[in-house]
Image (cartoon, rainbow, N blue to C red; front, side):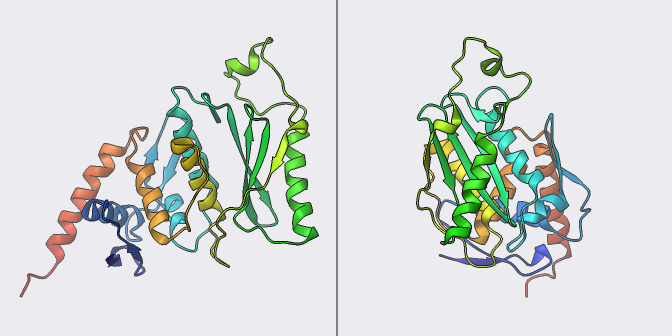
Length: 251
């Protein structure tokens, strides 16, 4: 396995490569998105509802807390894969609730088919204080007088639709990989859990590494839902041509 220092990011940053990676394409795109010399206010992702700038995506640099705009964009793009824009996947009727407690993110997955409340916590400390923290956060969700909804949600508006009581759902706290101390990776675990369940119906996420953050940023930029994907691709090529033109000739 090779390592590649990305000096174009402003700080030397090493990502691990895997055999299926398109090294040149990914690293060029990463250099264009994360480069500190480029306009931080430039929009690099634009959808019908959300706009994300270069500075927002730079919150995906290792050690940084991922900005909520990035997480909202990810949820929006995943929901659009289902054909319509929802905060849950229609085939499974699954609702994702990010929970913020004491400077830490957890993900509550509400499975309406299985009637389960699945709390995914990458910083699952033991002790009564932390158990109360999780219970309080979950209770705040299930005790809401109304279901989470979108104004265009036909499923919710249907008067004949079943309304299971979430307070009766079975709580689950599965064992999941834990983040490194001081890593600020709880947001990344939350993002990867949503992606993994969306694609394969599992929460089996490996440890978060710097490459995980880089790959998420590039995926968001180059997905078909991004109206600026072609422009970004052209910008990557233009940036590389300028960068390569500035390099000294090989001896």
